[in-house]
Image (cartoon, rainbow, N blue to C red):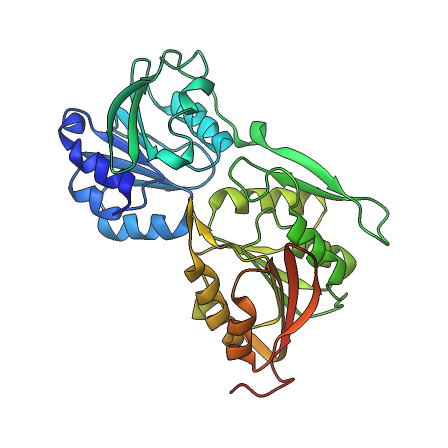
Length: 344
């Protein structure tokens, strides 16, 4: 279990008296050890694990506020993004009654020690309840319930100039979405080097707010674009990005590639290498091991990544070659085509 979850179990007796709404909890084993009656996830992988482990509780996967069901308190695993934590607390003020307890647990490196300084006056001052496993457990409560909570109120918007287009690309983002609220330097570099395909099926893997797929689709409306991300918040942002630019696409909430996705003519990505605070190369490794089989006969992979990551070697293992299209002091753009060199 993650260190914050270990701390929760050490403090298990604190939670015995109140049925819990758990939020962003990575370890589904906790469903059998705590008085959990409802669950809110925005990570597709966590959501599936909890649904398997605890089919009888109330599950919610999405960016919107959950239903609390019979829950009288909430236990939140602190997200690494402070804006997302504040977003979650606002949602919980909407679904919990006045006086309800909100517990927050998090890794010491993830902002748990200072997040209470940003609490709104609608929450009680935070109390430090337990320390251990390099983690901290805080307690607050709802001073003022929130009458309404609408995801639409939390979108932020930016515009991105796009050559040969009459208007900028409009991007919508939510707290917790990668590079909120704009575009990161790596994706910006990739956009400069992507070809202008006119037809075919594209997969925007780890799509964030959908910038890569939307950019390509505006250039060529006949493209069929699928947007995949593990985050419900990212997919909500992508859906809004598509609507703003009068585009259509298929949004898929999934933790990695599966056979049910089928094949694509092009896959574009700025793949992640973190799970929460932890560096996690396995996400990118699994993607690069699997992407070959998801490409059509002459399918192409285009991605950008931090230069220190071992992606070129993995691309070469899968495709037999890897072309470094561009690089600067931080990022590199890589390209591989399925039939250019036979796979070894």
